[in-house]
Length: 372
Image 1 (spheres, helix red, strand yellow):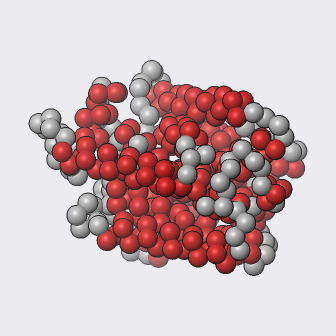
Image 2 (cartoon, helix red, strand yellow):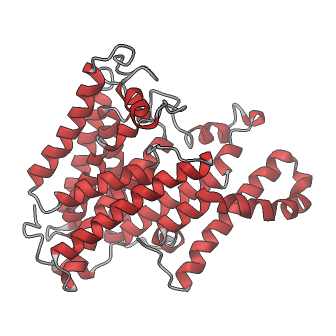
Image 3 (cartoon, helix red, strand yellow):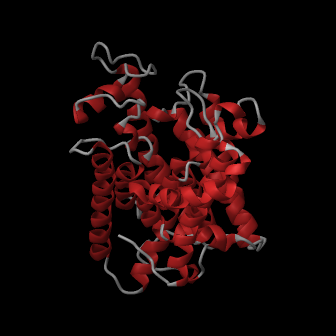
């Protein structure tokens, strides 16, 4: 691996990865699009059988087995965080921060992510509940583990990531408690038991809190990809490594799916590998188009959404999107009511999404970056 001394900032630190900004921005744009209810509008009963309905299905999670596009959004996000970690680490070291200071920052950030992720469930429930399936809560653990081993050799990072996946695979397959020893049946597996142990009840959608353990691989592999892109190899070599790594992930994930089904809700091993494969290939495509070929038209439109990812996610989640919708609704109905209920709803959702994007744009032009 090109970066053998993680305490010495490389010269490449001064070069910003526009491809990463774009990748993160697109991912966040899709997340706030969900809060605008645009994707829900695409599954209106009257659209069933249409192209819009078929596309809309890809923006909703698979009910259990299988892999839809929307199942990739959380892996994308966790992977992107990993890619950005070595860049952030080097910037802090370059400006004179000690490792201990950076470590304390990482610990604080992990704690805040955990707290915010947990608090979102409390807000939704209107009472204190102990649930940690939220992407922020899951990311708090994957981020901190990835940080702890970020300076270790590549083989150590790969080894730990695979070990965590195998731990989860073994627990699901060989968990001995009656009633929860059916590895891949909803509500009857180790993940369901763990949910009950922590929260006192199973999640209604069968989302497992334990997912943070196997999906730590996404963030660790993101760190390795970030180290690669900051290295001194040629762009051709970097692309080759990314493409090969992505294809290997897809081969393992889809190839082993007859043995271990691809299930996002409990993050099976095949899901982790397959989604990681797509995550790496998406990064490779962005890097090739934007940083190598310099096709940068339109990058800013999405990149500004990714500049305040935590803020816009929390704002939309805790009611910001609903507030905008409530304000816009009467004006939208007055202007587009003639188009019919379905079209008016699609237009309203699009307008809400625009205002969420514009909020990110306003923060960008004011140079306001909200971080933890």
